[in-house]
Length: 509
Image 1 (cartoon, rainbow, N blue to C red):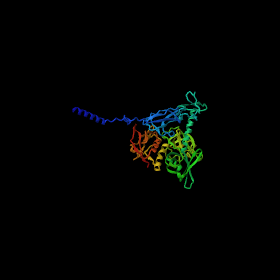
Image 2: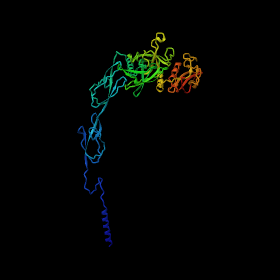
Image 3: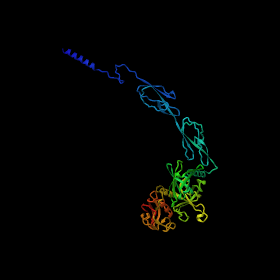
Image 4: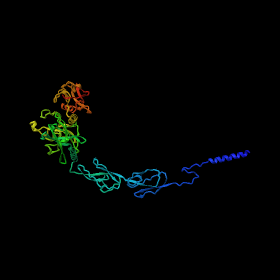
């Protein structure tokens, strides 16, 4: 009985175990007992210029494809794309494939750089050439005192290059020059530099004509365009050119022809007789050059200068004359019947005549260093004179136009000392000997005393002291500073050098 029961239990366990056996599925979702499933294949075709580039690749569905990298002479491969026109839809490397697909190779021609070495230190812009493109044009540079003799691929000038040649790589070309014995290189270089400078700055000069309320002409002069805001241009000229005007017109020259800016497009900003500086502005869609101010403190006697203006009016528009700086910081006062004018001026011998008033005085760099204002002739001096022209210094102009633009008038500063402008009253070799300090003046606040010798001046816009050798230099430095601006001086007292603290300049009484 026991053996029978034991045999029955074994049979039952075998049956239960047989009911619980489930085949383990394969990776593809099938079981070992399922019939085999065939892989799904898709084809990837690679095309170049409508011709098959590689053998078609068979790829199992969802398999990631490795893309080949083709080469094409003189071209750069940019990738495979589903479209062969815009090349917008790209097939990325290792992309899964879900259908048959044809992809197209996108190539772009290689860009080669053609560099030009003038062999004289001057720069020429490189030129970009595509692979397979032929050279259609070669520039012929100019060099003073030399004749251009072609471009070469080597510095020994054994391998010339010609128009029509195909460029297959980056290439540097070298200019070959032959000395032109007819010319002196230094003289021609200077002459060329000056003429180029004049061509550049000349469009900043305009002719200014004023008339009274009855339309009767009052004056004709010149003006210098110094600033642009949008289509608005600012012009500096002389106060005496604008004085008494009811209307203003402007003429400007282009290619030998005159063009007009009418009074309705011109606005008077302000002017000042003490400095003989005035400002107007006009609107125009025409493009005008605006000058760069030079530092008149840096001028030296003997320096070459060029006057540009309109002597005798429009007939001689934009005439150019050349001279040198004859003197610096000239204060002529009432001796020469100059009316209100009492500012410092630059003396030069470039020819100026009526109509040059308000015109520019440039240095050789084309910097605006002065505004031609008056000349001394024999009718003023009673004696024969020649080459005595004067221009308001650029630093003074900058100072005055800031006030005219901001306030419509020039607000003159006051320092507060008296001194003998010519005699060294303290027996000093240079500097300004103080005779008296005015009460409640900037000089008194600075702590200056009689017999102090001022040898340096600076305002808070200067990096360092301006050396002061005489009274006129100090007057100019004060005039070129603004009311309310902090200033300090360097001075000698009892044989020792001192420097004051800063104090604000007050307004002239």
